[in-house]
Image 1 (cartoon, rainbow, N blue to C red):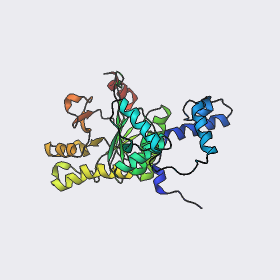
Image 2 (image 1 turned 180 degrees about the horizontal axis):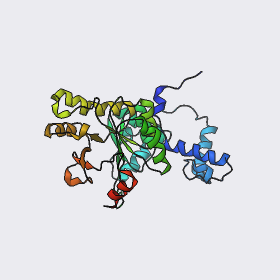
Image 3 (image 1 turned 30 degrees about the vertical axis):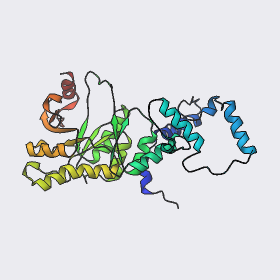
Image 4 (image 1 turned 45 degrees about the horizontal axis):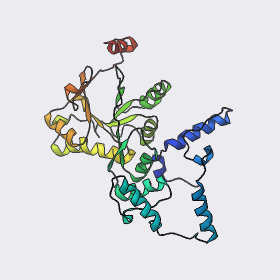
Length: 304
């Protein structure tokens, strides 16, 4: 039996996922119109006549061997001239010709990105970028400009990491096209279950390694619980981990400084109430849902 590498478990490529779903629909007898496949030939595009002529000439003259590894000099000169005309001064020696944009993205990111680096990506964007970053062990950071929030935005967060998160919350939320946030105490869920949540669109954030009262811990212990826990999650699951959740909701100024040092964008307390930027992004309130809250109690909160 041929076993795939563990690395492939981290590889997700949205276009390929869409194709698989589309093919399943076709097998079920439904007609699918493909708008997402990067194959212009399939939709009537044909190479211009001068390109066909050059290729035919190259074949006739047996110009079919390997070119220079950085591309034909004439092609690099043409690209350099085009870029310079656009206002980006470029020399031919600055140009590398590749077999399509996918190879270029792979080469550039592989050459520049170290494991654990954070790379800023547009959202929505080309799905190959996060796929390459996952393979390299880097973390994608998404820039979403001008994305409006709904009038009453709601985030459902689950603390610690229990079996009920994947056994009950995951299928119920998925049925309503909703994803949650898991504030994970590392070790409470096996990585397989965490990856299950990630594939369903859940955000995984840090809730420390051991769930201590951070106010009572030494500086090195606080750094381990706050900073190192985020690094562990990023390294293990190749995810951003933008938020921290204080164990028991306890914190002081020293702990908040450690959270900022760890690179978190926001942090959650157990102060009861709506979250607002005016509270400070590292000390946000939450609405606590208990077994006695019930649907009516939640509806009352959401209607407030």
